[in-house]
Length: 429
Image (cartoon, rainbow, N blue to C red):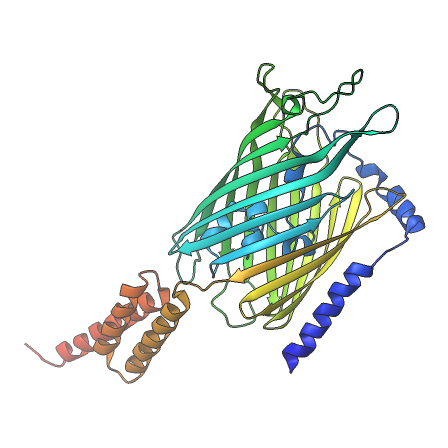
């Protein structure tokens, strides 16, 4: 019954996003005046701007403050180290309705074996293109596109029970900008290959680090409540001007980001992020920083509410979203109010469907380890230290870095040594 109620609320939320049409010109003008000092005079000096468009869904609901959280497949846009610490194998479909009839579509998948994670994604940003001649007749049409393919690998080093490890990862990416052919101004004839001459191929890489630990934790859980992440995005270059001598003069929108998340109590998580964009080009000017923050409230095991705010130059963005899971399918819908201009604030909607495909037996393994450890605790409480050591050694065969079993064996050996000394002292030479 509760799931039906929550599902009804979620569907109502989707309907609200669909029909929402805000007229906030006066408010937007006021906001524009407030944030005028943050105007970035160097905005737009890089190419492949679609690399800055989020896939949508959960990460966008949190104001883009995801580098230090990265707890689902959205990590591919934020922190490549996270594939090695995700609980489940996931596949996802993202749709982000952007501006001016443009859209972003993304397919991605990730899986983890032990402490190694792998992931892959393809995405396509597209916007309709129509060319008109001097008489207003349509000369050509097509789509301007920017497509991207990515392969990710990461590893969580020194992962244990108390120290959760240091995850490091990288994502190798290639992107292609497709420009449709256009017409000659004089003859009106389509110039074959004219679009290709303006197209481009980019090669780049992302690098990331994710550290997880417990601090100021007021609830019981194996999952750490603090996450800190650092990432470098879009480090590379683009090749342009096909057929006219290839040139590396098309800089990419690179950035450095640091983020953190804190689970205050089990249902509530807050996130924050600071990002510094830059361009790998001699003489490129300073670019304005970006910042974001978000909060997630897990209402039930299958429903969460999310909200976030992001400042990117002089353009503040407010977002809210909802996430609902049923039959191992997790659906997220997000609404973003983007004050891109003072004249027409933009209402954007993104939707994501994530398919949860199991944890490769990690949950069952943890359950078995807990059972054996508790059995050892029982033997220890009964004074049967030798049996406790045997059971805890079996635990270490399953997980060699299970710290409670390591400490338990040390304590049991200490007790056996102490009793041996007592027995030895009872005999006089």
